[in-house]
Amino acid sequence: MKSVEQYACIYAREFPAQALLRLRSELRNQPCAVLEGDPPLQYVCSCNTKARLLGIEYGMTRVELDTFPSVTALARSLAEQAATKTALLQCAGAFSPSVEDVSDCGTFRCVVDIAGTEKLHGPPATLGRALTERAKELGIASSVAIASNFHAAVCLARGMWAKKRVMVIPSGDESPALAPLPLSVLDLSEEQAETFSLWGIHTLGMLAALPEKALIARMGQEGKRLRQLASGTLPHLFVPIQPPFSLDEFIELDSPVELLESLLFVLGVMLEQLVLRAAARALALASVTATLSLEGGGSHSRTVRPALPGNDRHLWLKLLHLDLEAHPPNAAIISLTLTAVPGHVSKVQLGLFSPQLPDASRFDVTLARIRAIVGEESVGCPILKDSHRPDDFQMKPFVVPTGPSGTQNSNRSLTSMRQLRPAEDVSVTLRDQQPASFFFRQQRYDVERAYGPWLLGGEWWGNSRWGFQQWDLIARSHDGILLCCCLVRDLTQSRWQMAALYD
Image (cartoon, rainbow, N blue to C red; front, side, top):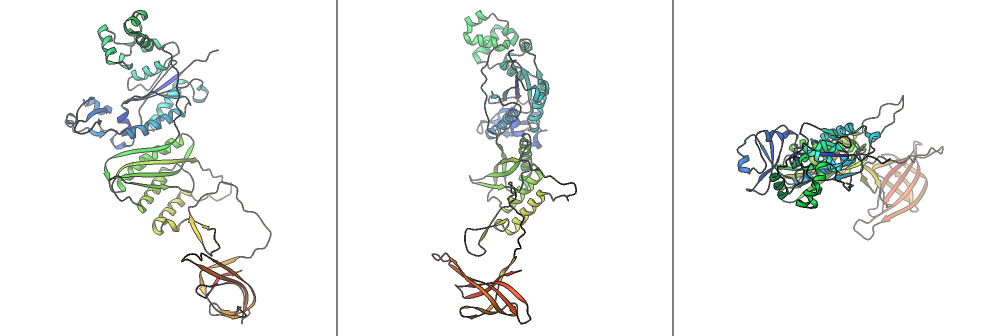
């Protein structure tokens, strides 16, 4: 039995305007028009519904638009359109791996092959509603037309009236459904549109009713293709794309921004979009990089990486705020790019009688505040360097281990050593080139056993040359107090110090 083809076309009108208003939620309820071109030859290329109701039309110049004082003028941003298009293609790819992009310069259109997805997403009407809801979460109003013919789904989506969100055409009913649609849903050339107008052909039904041979005789094979488009019978070789999964958001600011507080509202909206896109794939944000394009051509980039991946928008906003406060840009900001690295959602398994663990997000915020006070190099986890120099370490960010713990139980008795920081100066008496007695914390100790010396040194080739002589001593005071300690002699300064005490 041959499987029935089924395609869902996602169609977003006024895409340049929707792409700009997607991250500008404060302008969504206001009439807005998008201008294209270089001043003073700018013209309207897109607008939202409120602006259209006021009488805004395509091709209006900037001077004509200024006669509508209530309309907000925005410059077209191809970069924001590209970022929004990527987000929508990834949204469609979550329902089916077979997605073909058929967008043009002013609208977004993509077709999803949904044949055989009923067990995953339900009947076609349910899947269509889910597609529009997912696009709405991304800030884009769209409509979905579902048909068994690829081109029929595209034409039906273009011809749907704005308030209708989902249309499902049963297999075999494409021609009656396409018949009342105007010829504008087809990509006709000016010559073809003029020819059909002279013939009195205005709808797809009238075009499909024309005799095929007579139409081919007058318009060639292109006439046959247009007639098949109008009747919903034109075959199509599906060419799926594989958009890479990336979490990027971009916005060009309407004017340069100098105050960081003015940027937080935009950051919050962009982070909300990143969280929604990651959560749609059962992922979380592991790190977020904010790249600020500065006035004058420079850029400023900062990366925030908490201990655990998460989708808490308020946490990410607070971490970015604290980081940018500690490392502010040196010029006004003209555009902003957020790039996130996805990670797996962290899960914590609690026991029935185990106390509740503290929230990891609070720990990240606390560390960010401490870093803002003491500096980046003073917060983190100490890591020993590959050197024999005492206390030679560096600070690295905290990382939650993902593998099994290497801790092993052992019944051996271990001796603990308490390192003194800073080391305390002592006065030492030598006998036969080894310590015989010393004064430590106003108490004299006589050495009973001495182990050493162990010589440590390095970097003799530079100005940071160092050398130590280490002794492990067992000493006793006149009061009978036993002391096990580690004495260190700085050979470069001939200085004795108490480095550690053994318990």
